Structures are given as structure tokens and as C-alpha cells.
Length: 295
Image 1 (tube, rainbow, N blue to C red):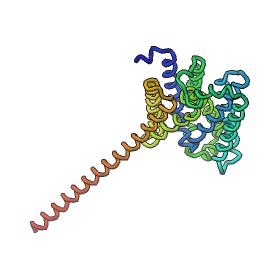
Image 2 (cartoon, rainbow, N blue to C red):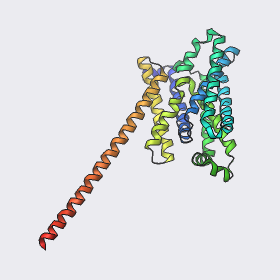
Image 3 (cartoon, rainbow, N blue to C red):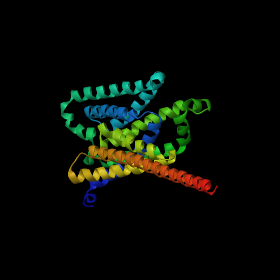
Image 4 (cartoon, helix red, strand yellow):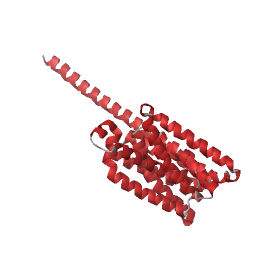
């Protein structure tokens, strides 16, 4: 508990918990929409915004936030231009974002060192201003999913039916992409650009495999995400490892352990079921044998 005496650790735990909650919920929707790479793409786009802010002497967190939101719009526009090859829009925007970031960073070599925190995450990189930004995104996310939960659910499983039923699919999809960009930008100070997709995807991947329903998947993803982030930050403080890598490895271990436990449980249940079937067959056989003897 010594670590909680420091202000920067208090901010890191608060920020990690907030980001884990909203990123986990978003991850379930992205996985079911088959857009798992979207978070990774927007993280690279956000990096270009951070580089732009550093060069223009503006707040890098704010510019990264705005550019990531614009990246979400660009992905949606490209997705509609390549409807038959939706993954192509992800690749195009990722290439554009990463190449822009590399070019902008090369214009000023002195800003490269400061980018380590954005690339890999840092507990000390979370300022009070960024914490308030994350809290604002979390509140916006909660309101968004509260009012649009049912339309999004319908769009995930059958977008064509959602269109014919009168839902404004185009605008809902656009707003979802923008929200994804905002959440990705908010998560950057905690896990970094290179690992932000791990925070969004890994808890959702485990939840979807073991949850019996959509609501249960959301709840499990949130619990796994928060547990992984808090544990990762604590481990990072104790053994001085990068928080992004620590969080990603812990979430990955949760995923492997969860899938292994599920497979083991299925095998045990099958073995018990087979044993019960064998016992029933044996009982029937003994009853038939006894009946033949009595005859």
C-alpha cells in the first residue's frame, strides 16, 4: 500500500481503472463487429496527432485526442468506399497515420525522447489534466452505450436488417468510430500506443469465449480489464517494468488461463457425462441379463 501514498500512483490507478472499464466494453463491440484492428489503427493515428501537437507547441494529448477522433471519421468513410473489402479501410488509415507520425517526428529530433511515454505507457505520464479528460470520455461512453445499446446490438449481428428497420445506421456507425478514437487516445498515457489494442481486445476476447450471454460478456470484460490494469500497474511499480508491457502480459495470461480452464472444464464434463452413460448402459445390460435368467 506504500505506492498509494504517491500522487502520481493515485492518478495512475484512477486513470487505469477508468480506461479499463470503457476500453473493455468497447472491445466487446469491436470484436463482434469484426473490427478488432480498428483500435490499433487509431492508436497510430493518435500518435500522429501527438507529434503534430509537439511540433506546433500545442498540448500533445489534446491534439492526439482530436486527430484520433478524426481518424475514426476517416475509417468510417473509407469503410463505406470499400464495402466489399472493409479491412482495406483499416489498412489505409493505419498506413496514413503511422507514416504521418514518422515524418512529423523526423522534423524535430528533440521530441523523440518524449514519445517513449506515449509509445509504451508510463504511470508518471498521467497528469491531472489527462485524468479529467479520461473521466469526461468515460462519462460520454457511459451515456452513449446507455442510449444506443439496443441499436448497436442490432447492427452488430445484422446491419442490413438494421437498415431496413429504419435505424440511422450510417450515423450510429460514424459516432461509434469517433468514440473509438476518443477512447484509444484516452488510453494512450496508461498503456501506450503500441499496446492500447491489448487493453481493448484481450479482456473482450476472453469474455466472448466464456460468457453465456452478451450482457455477461460486457460484465466479464470489465472485471478482467480492471483487474489486469490494476495488477499491471502494481507490478510495474514493484519491479520497475513498463506499465504497458506489464498490463498486456497480465491480460494475456488471464486469456490463456481462462481458455485453458474452459477447455479443462468441458473435458471434465464430457468425461462425467460419458461415465454416467456407461453406468446407465451397464445397468440396462444387467437388467436384461437378469430378465433372461428368470425366463
